Amino acid sequence: MTMQANTSEPKNDFDVIIIGGGLAGLTAALLLTRKSKKVLLIEKKSYPHHRVCGEYVSNEVLDFLKSMGFDPFKYGAMPITRLRVSTPAGKSIFSPLDLGGFGLSRYTMDNALFELARERGAEIMTKTKVTDVDFTNNIFTVKTNTGDTFSTGVVIGCYGKRDTLDKQLGRAFMQTHTGYLGVKYHIKTDYRADEVGLDNFEGGYCGISRVEGDKYNLCYLYHPKRQAEFKTIPDIEANVLFRNPSLRKIFSNADFLFPKPEVISNFSFAPKTLVENHILMCGDSAGLITPLCGNGMAMAIHSARLLCDLIIQSGVLSNSIITAPQRDQLERMYKKRWHNNFSQRLFWGRTIQRFFGNSTITGLSIKSIHAIPPLERWLIAKTHGSPLVL
Image (cartoon, rainbow, N blue to C red; front, side, top):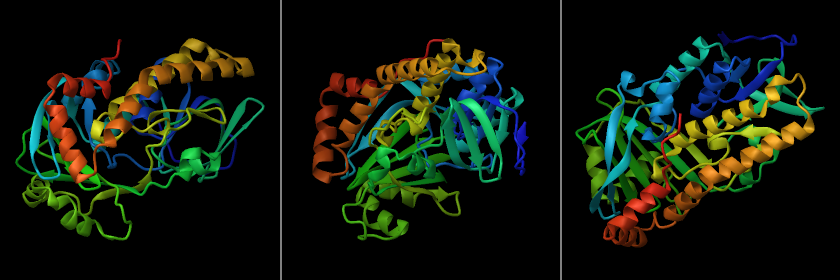
């Protein structure tokens, strides 16, 4: 059911309220409704919509997605088996992706999971923004910009990289203004369908990979040293990205399908807390892996699976009121298991990113790593997980 209500009358309680309808939020909704829990998901946009994202998914979550009733290849997903990385000077190296992955747009994937969650019984409010979350006497009260108020015992935060709710919660990473800019296009071009490309340039890197149909996702991250050096996206591309001959060739041979690019700015890769005022953070709200690792979509899905398994196993949803000790135990277990699964992956992602963005250091690092194949494959493995056990 899709809800678009506009009333201040009290609503029935929900077992769980999920804030944000990206991959983590939709996966959580599917898993919890499968256990017959009453779930409300609140998403600020309508489906389908585009997101700034690399749109490459590691095969670690493929069998799990199929077990939920979603087969990405029925929606035109493209298998991806190898990686190409170019230095800022345009010199490319190639490496196999042992686990592999697939390319599928968020426009298609999120919408399919939304439809599936709605069919399974999740109540979903679209075009609705959460304005306040209050936690008093072990009960959450969630307010929205539509004037609605909902109560629940469990709130999961899946609202992405950065949101006004983070500021209201006083999350520390909001004090880190990094100046990162993310830009995404869909294009048509002549490029290998089984390859994900990662092209480096001064201050950032750009990924390209095939998605459904004959489209390619082209998405880059830029962190300028001087904020005002180039003020527009065309200026950045012409004066920064195109210094890499590989990128200049890709852009010049592309048929751009968006009237304008999708853009996100001023987000951070700083560590985040997993629980804020007893809200359980999931997906990018819990921790953001660097885009060059190409594994954020799989991590979002994996983290939702981990959290929902813990919520169900803890038994907290079997009680009308969750006691403080029960909540404390659930939060401690979530932190422990999340760090066991993802802290090393995020650490290596941030570590590898430090070697990218500088023309001299990036070129030397890429050539040095590629010269030692076991090291190259070990680093790739460190930023990817093992297939989820069903």
